[in-house]
Length: 208
Image 1 (cartoon, rainbow, N blue to C red):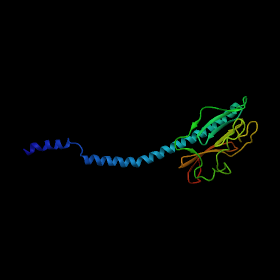
Image 2: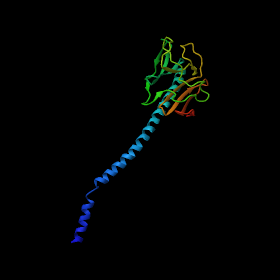
Image 3: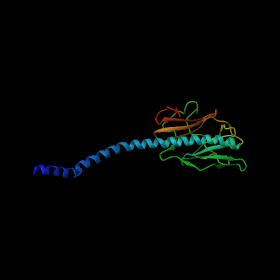
């Protein structure tokens, strides 16, 4: 009798599935692993977003330089520091005004224009760290909370005086940060476009 019942009892036990305690233990382990992984994933994704914005600014600055030469005019990257946007603009010589060349690009969530805790600029770029000079409107007046990197028809970085004025300058830069790291795009009188990276709390610029 017992021999006949043994296999049947074992089958009923194995077919009963997991106990409530076993399921709770598994759920707890999954929760712990998820709690550990989410902050790391968020930090990694934030870093990707910041770097993507930095590359976008760097590429647009390079395009502005080429556009100025091709149009035999001026072109600039116009950054609205408060709105967190940047766009390419060219100088319309016929109507004496700046016109947008494409739409405005918005920085990713959590990314802002700024230098964070950095106190010195990348080597051989600026005398003092800071965003490029303020942009000017069509009448030559400065626009608050903006920064512009401007090129003349020879591809040289110039100040933001209206054409035909404007002297060559070597302190053009745009800085963005997510509070953890800082990226910079700099232009010198060479004129060489460079992208840099540094931790937010250290003056340790690394060429990208």
